[in-house]
Image 1 (cartoon, rainbow, N blue to C red):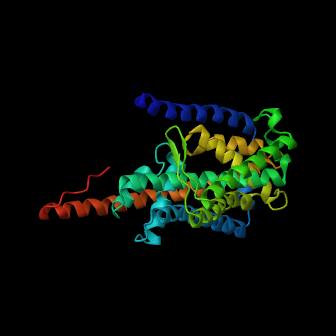
Image 2: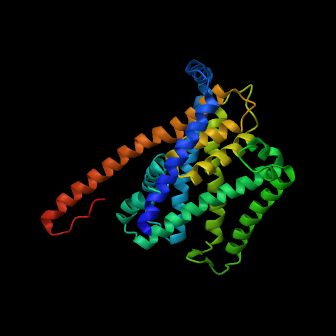
Image 3: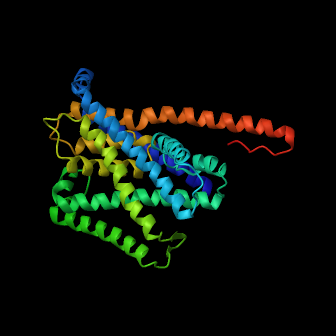
Length: 329
């Protein structure tokens, strides 16, 4: 059964890429490359700089995810620089290759086991980082839907009509905020772990919980800011609208299991932005993929190669003094 599951998720991801790619092709049919290039060159230099700064904020917050998890584990001997490089490499690979392949377990195990962490500790670290991201998505989703319940109307055709009404949207927003409030309450009151079948949720200490509530929204705000600053200034919607559409698009991409959310992310975003020329939206999405995905991906590969080269050199050195080398992945 386990082997079957290993094939099912990649198959689902591949199917999502094919279907969304076809729908995206239909959506962009008739759009010329010259129009997209004109949109890219029309973005002022200072807005490219702001998009780059947003990328830095997003990845800095992701590094904070790891630091928060280490604080929860009581681990304090690992430097910020080491944690930041490990986090950057993990998420750069996960965002591009697919969360089901590089969810953090493989890269983090190689990096943190070298610093003395055990496999159970690393498993808790990975789970808490995922939980932090989920809390941030739920929190910001609840905020934007409560502030502007008409936002789900932008997803008409992708969601059931009953979910896109303002009353329903606001109810969903309040429900999401209630979930976060219950989590915070469980942490403050030191409630017993919540167990659902094999899933066990340990409430972190309030000091850890507060950091989660800051780091997770900060990462999502930074990622959404890349697209916001890449959109044309005279036509751009409010940041709340861009953030809401980004949350919906990014969530759909994660659920689809498509590598890098390829096609799924763009399809949802284009559908939810009918009031902006498609060439301008596509140009902003290209900037997002380059800044948030492709450049970090290239850098992360270099980091992995350098790390494994150093580990191999250490293993070769240890062979002469009777120490068993660390097995390479």
